[in-house]
Length: 265
Image 1 (spheres, rainbow, N blue to C red):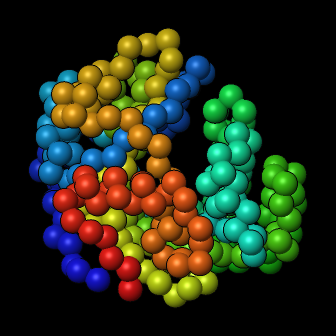
Image 2 (image 1 turned 45 degrees about the vertical axis):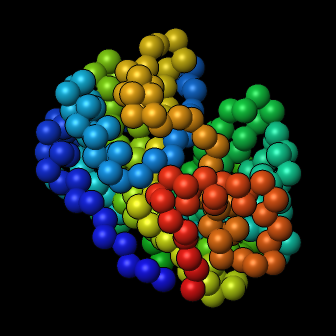
Image 3 (image 1 turned 90 degrees about the vertical axis):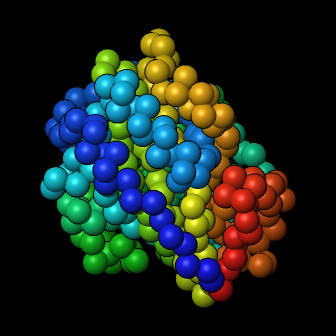
């Protein structure tokens, strides 16, 4: 797998005033609309410059404005969650365990999408050492059964995702932006690994009643909304037996964005 030379965003992030986790938690987007975007690191650098000029603030944890995340995605033996997404089931779920490396916290997270396109997330704190096997935790098993269709005995780890995240908030506190870079994946079942190289995945969470500054900034840089799932793209790249259908087009879109092929080892 080719080594990727990533852009250092430290200098531009210094131009963005800090916002604390406590201030972030106070932002309630009651009429929330979520949109995803795909771009590359060079374009992101220019987007961050414009965000700083527009007064956006960056989440700072332990003095860092770019944080490391590790996630473990769970699924059934037959990859039901993957195929529910591939087959465009309006009502679907994903189960993952996520570790926030800077804070040392970890959570079991259940994402549920309803037939109105809204995504809701439920989570409970988990010891970090249970990231790969929360079935040893009776409370976690009970929580999963109470908030999803699945039992812990039906699920096992499929793949891990590791990435760096920048989180921005607009001056009016009506939108949040998560920006994921340096995305790498490892499939536990096949042993294959891959990376999205210079690709960047952006998610905009906004109050549907308020105008979005960031949408204008993204449009200025020709970055348009796209539907993309880290889990489904990662499986497409690392599991030759998974039937990707439309997810192959997502992989081609990423390759077109970064200007070269993705590889897997």
